[in-house]
Image 1 (cartoon, one colour):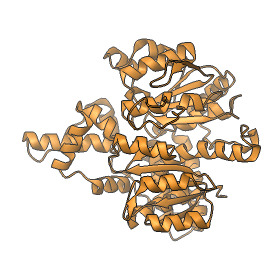
Image 2: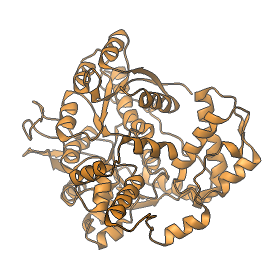
Image 3: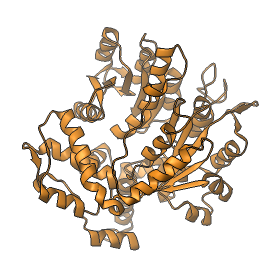
Image 4: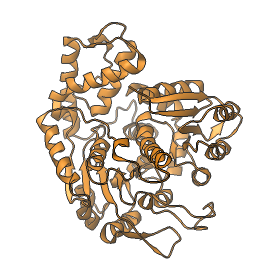
Length: 468
């Protein structure tokens, strides 16, 4: 696997730095690391890099300064910043100084790859053609692996809608099934392939930041708005596609503004008075039952019908079991090549174990299991002992799907019940604070306070990441 892009990772915690380095190498990046600003500055001056990933809170100074310095280097890298609980001021200032996004810890390599690749492709296209769009042969999409009947039905729908560049698409499916891969396939298999594909997770940002990201803003629109204003994703993606992941988490206020974009192909920037016209395809995705959200008045009915022009349901991995051996072989080959291990495949017993597992985490879980197997396997074939499968069985999975969850309480005090509920929701949402707060019916500040009260800190998130 050829590494197309280089990335500098700046992280003060040696363990987190090593985890990011390994994960990004597996995703195909050439990775250089630094533990502080001083080292990062030296590396930036010594050699160009395509991308920079930096913590905003470094041991020897604020990462915001490094964002600005990196953006001013000759190579003009794509910059993503991250932090524990970033506040609005940090997010706005980082983007003002040149970051394309600010994400909350824990940082997942898959999410970074989905965020960085479109920006890197666009950057490469500009550098090769003096600002013109990238050519078709410069652009590609990740493969969608499998040949089951269920997957082929999805791919047939993808082919049909890819041929209609203006049609809005709503992709539904469980977490980890590959909804963004389907969205990318629609974009890169269609006439918009040479134009930008812009993806954003609607649950990852609060309402004001998400609004600024989508619609852009004018000079002085809010405290910290830069001196020239900024294009939003809708403007930046003109001619291309905007992918709105977790659309069910979008506030009612932004739902109304999105509806206008779909109806009129125009919008106003935050703080603006002039209409901005765009030609974009919108693809939305959710793991929620949006119609149920409509019935509970949590999602606008008119927006639902506007989005649901071409519905595509991505099946769970349990529904496409014939694809499991092929997917596992794909991941094993990819990780074995990246980690330089002579692994040839699965033993028969290991393949049976994978085929029989219920896969509550779907393809994402299978990918993680294969990565772990490659790391611990020293032979030519992966054996059952190398498979770190979750202990849930098919009967438990069916029961969970047909009944509500029960809190595994040690005592029935209100405090114990609250702590266990918060822990459960944080785990379910992979410590996405915005989404967890919404599920719990409290604001983010209250959730932060309760997390501190119950000692739910970064260590819990790392433990969660290792267990997935």
